[in-house]
Image 1 (cartoon, rainbow, N blue to C red):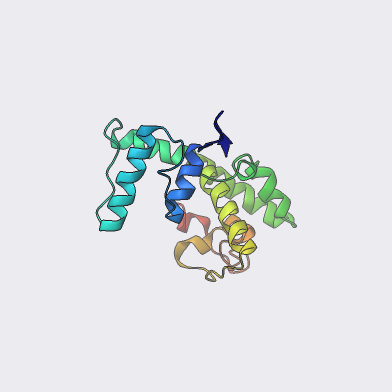
Image 2 (tube, one colour):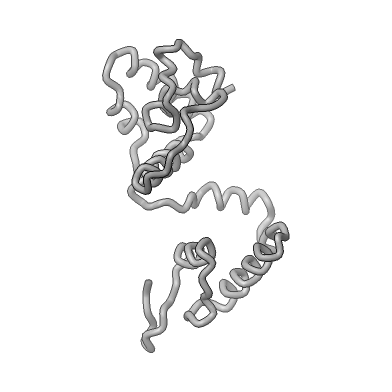
Length: 167
């Protein structure tokens, strides 16, 4: 957090989001009025159970694109080289071949950012001792998801086809 020349806190966008997620009051902090107004509207909507509004100056496609671009995760995860990361987790030539096949599909569908976020999420859950399921649905067909810890089903061992997941 930064401070101005009077020692008042100045929040960055990410810090405002963290306050929102934690329900903290930011009215006493030095925040741009437009950000504060948006924050207060959002808090009010969340408290009353109303659906959140899309910002007036942004069409839904731009809003979705912005959210998909940001992902709100630490830079260390955002800058991971996915190919090197998952290939580094592979041991046998069969695993390497499967990972390369899956990487082509993940890349084709533009899902590298999703993989980066999943690596971050799994790391966050492990760090905080949060338990998650063994695996569910077609995601267990992905060996890459198995390697990064999303599920516990070895799709190579059970001869599951990746095409069942990424149709």
